[in-house]
Amino acid sequence: PVATSLLRTIRLGGALADVGATLSGGAGGSNMDWAELEMKIAYLNQEVEEAQAALAVQYREVEEHMERATLAENKLMDAETKLEAAKQEGEEQAFLATSLASFADGRVAA
Image 1 (cartoon, rainbow, N blue to C red):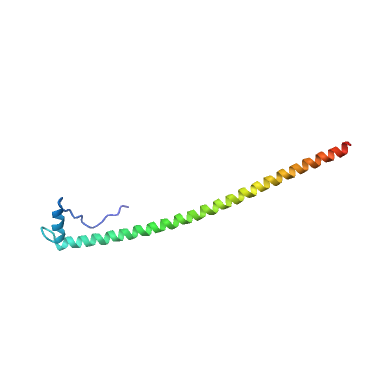
Image 2 (cartoon, rainbow, N blue to C red):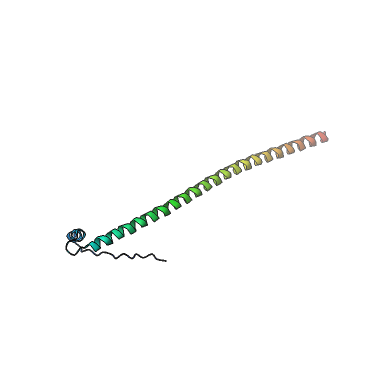
């Protein structure tokens, strides 16, 4: 869906003098122009508020994602540390088993 405004776009002349004259109520300007400008300001203020609310929601979502990512990275580092410790323990046990087997073979042969 495309949002459309019910406000009429005010077409001012190209010259700054025309803009000043229109806004001051002279040279074709009217109270209706002022009312339209006030309506447009109110509409744009509402748009700003909606955009700020959407930005706040996105900011909270980004913070949540950052927290989840940090937690996941910490868990990964813990898992990698445990894996390294398990590998080292396995290598030590394999070395001990090999050493014990060699010692036993030497005792049986003697």
